[in-house]
Length: 401
Image 1 (cartoon, rainbow, N blue to C red):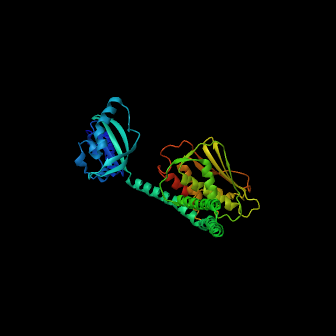
Image 2: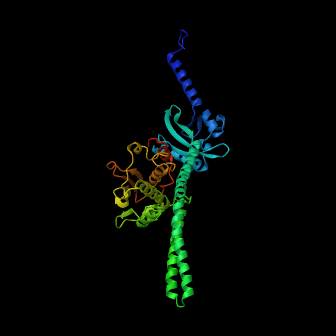
Image 3: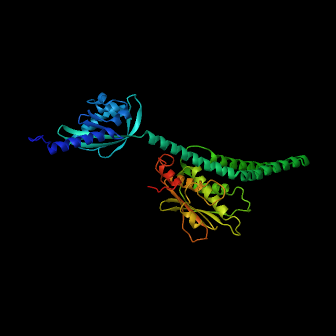
C-alpha cells in the first residue's frame, strides 16, 4: 500500500500470481505433492487426497514415505540424502512408473515426475502423480484380446480344414484296415506266414503313426497355451508346414516346393505361432494359384542380414494394388471366406518375436511374395511379454509410433 492509499503494483501482482498457483494446485487432475529436503510434506493437493485417501492435514509435516510401499519407504530418505550430497539424479526430471500405497494399505501403480526448486526456505521438490490403474486394466484387456485373436485364427483355420483332415486321416486308416485284412486272409490260407505278417504289420504301424502325427499337429496348432520359446530345426519346421498346408488338396500331387539354405542354425521361437504364420501364408498362396495349369508355390529359407528369412512366393494373380495398403489390417482381405484376421495376426506374432512380415514388391500379375523375418538372437522377454498397444493400433489401422 502506498502513502496515497493505492495498492503497490508489485504486491498486487504477487498476490494474483499466488492465487493463480493455488487455484491450479487444487484443481489439477493429477496429484501434486511438495516436500522439503527432509522429505516432509509441505503441500498435498485435492487430487492427491482422492488418490491416497488421506486428508492434507494428516500428512502435512510428516515424511512422504507414508504413501509409499515398504520397499520404497525404507530407502527413500537415503536416496534423497544421496542426491543432496552428490547431485546425481535418479528420478528428478526423468519420471518413471513406481508403486504407491493408499491409506487402506492398497498398493497401486502411478506415474511419478519430480521437479526441484530452490526457495528461501531451502530446496523443495514437487511430485506430479498420475494413477495408472485404469491404463493397466486396459493393457491387461488388450493382452487378453490379443491372445483370443491369435487363438481364434487357429480355430478358424481348423474349421476350414475340417474336411481336409477327415480326408487325410481316412487314407492312412483305410490303409491300416486293408493291411490287417490281408494278414487275416493270408493267415487263413497259408501256414508259414511269419515274414509276410511282420512286413504287413510294419506297414500298418507306419500308417497308424502317420495318422497320429496328423492329429498331433492339428492339436498343437489349435491348442491354447502361452507362447513358449524353444530351439526349432528349420528343415523340420518347413516340412511339417508344407504337409499341413497341403491337407485337403484336390489338385493331385504336390506343387508346394521347399528351398532351404544349407547349415542353417536352429531358430529360437514359439514353434506353434511360427507354424501358424507359415501355414497361413502357404494356404493363401495355394488358394491364389488354384485352377492354374502350372501352379507353383515356394517356401524358401535363408539367413539374411537381419536374421532368418522365410519367403513364400506363388505364380498367382498377385495382390490387387487397392488392397496393398490395408493388407495387414484386421477384418480386411480379398478372400470371400474367413474373417480377415490371418495376415494381421501373423504380422503381430512376427513383431512380438522381434521380426516382421511384409509383402514384397514384385512386377504386377507375376504372383505374390511374402517375407517373414525373424531374428536369430532374441531377447529373453520378447513374444507375448511386451505391451500390445502397437499390435492393436496395427489392427485398427492406426499409424505405428
